[in-house]
Length: 155
Image 1: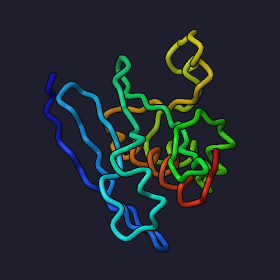
Image 2 (image 1 turned 90 degrees about the vertical axis):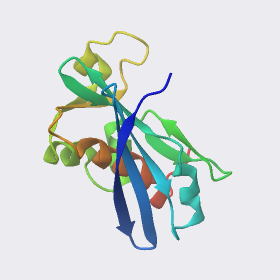
Image 3 (image 1 turned 60 degrees about the vertical axis):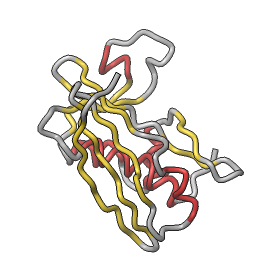
Image 4 (image 1 turned 90 degrees about the horizontal axis):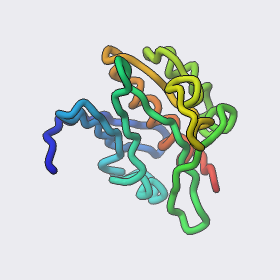
């Protein structure tokens, strides 16, 4: 199955950091955020290039994403981990929930709270937002993918 999408590019910069991040809005209403190029950033950011996407799905009237955190393994490859709010904040160096709310998130909480989920994944953190909050998934991506790699968060 093929689906058409429209991408927006963002440049994420910092000390010795320049990444191109792509936010793709798909015709089916879903989105995903991923690093498309690391430029001359340190090699450890290779783990993000076209990997470890942040998917965004429609849940009723809202959009929803799970801000799972990238943690680096000893071999330098990153994997995604369900993280507590404190772990997300430590990895990002900021209050992730505050940054998401500041950029338009309606609510952060567990899957159980946000989606009435009673599955084994019900304790995972998520963020819910409206169509107007375009930057929420990009902020979530930077806080849960880019910042932990920059800060050397390990598994």
